Amino acid sequence: MMLDSRSTSNGSPTHDAVKDYYGKRLQSSADLVTSACCDITQTPEWLKAVLTKIHPDVLARYYGCGLVCPPLLEGCRVLDLGCGSGRDVYALSQLVGETGSVVGVDMTAEQLSVARAHQSFHADAFGFDNVTFLEGYIERLDQLALNPDSFDVIVSNCVVNLSPDKEAVLRGVRRLLRPGGEFYFSDVYADRRVPAELRDDAVLYGECLGGALYWNDFLRLATATGFPDARLVEDRPLSITDKEVARRVGSVRFYSATYRLFRIDDLETACEDYGQAVVYRGTIPGAESRFVLDSHHDIETGRAFPVCGNTWRMLHDTRFREHFDFVGDFSRHFGLFPGCGGSIPFVAGDSKDAGTCC
Ligand SMILES: C[S@@+](CC[C@H](N)C(=O)[O-])C[C@H]1O[C@@H](n2cnc3c(N)ncnc32)[C@H](O)[C@@H]1O
Image (cartoon, rainbow, N blue to C red; front, side, top):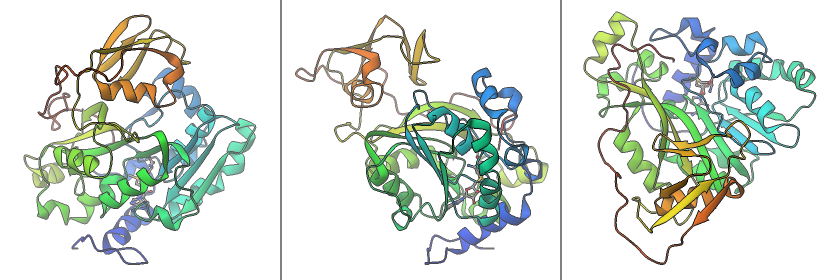
């Protein structure tokens, strides 16, 4: 089957193939042929407590590849792109609490019906109902009843790689985020451009490999769509457990990675040094001793931490502001911030050997 990038009003052939994969072919994460999804024993303790309140039928159809729960979500309005059966929506529902809300969007009716079937179960368990599920395409978010500039956080877990028009997805995200909001999402990336014969294979595409972006093309696309400084939070190699799939994939290496993209107009395309620093106050719940912005910024409480102009803005122009003291301004430039590199960002080794999820 050929997969293409055309998009009609009903959905492209790629959409239909992916719907078939997640709606009909897969009944649970055990049916995936490349690797098992993240199991609950690998998740942090605080998240285990959240996940234990989620219905087993929802958990059984979880096909994510990472964690999409950034800190400081209470009261936030959150959107989940490609929410599937709703595991992350129901986890986020608890984290945003009664004063926040979560909207899940997915194009596959079977996935959404599992999510919706358990809405009252979760409302009873949490003591409030703050979630909505919408059927739609993540490339056409403007066709859904969602106001521009209205989301604090948009998340997505192992979905963007499946989209035939990733640029439209990122443009839609940028439109819906409020200034200072962020797109915090886990996805699959390749260490090179995926060859056409792998891209056009329905199983490899459905398993989140065929449509994966080469990491540097993703960074270019992010810049072109208004997110010039994508921050890598964590990454790990994907294991290709099926021998035949591994043979077909050959030398291409795949990684699951979580990036955060902030909607901040003044971000620059590189980390520029203005001699600034921040001091973390230790006031974010669950992050009292340190705040991890991304894989390069593990900020200890109470200690002056030199930052580039972009990092300064990611902490100053966002929901994190009141948790930091800020030193300096943009009046004097000292050149490129040391360590602003350009080689492959993933550090987690060889994807042929490591065990991981999705
Ligand atoms: C790998 S699953 C991940 C589901 C969910 N995020 C999770 O973690 O369980 C991919 C999901 O994205 C949905 N999806 C893929 N492409 C989509 C698109 N273009 N528009 C809307 N939903 C899409 C599929 O229907 C499927 O439910």
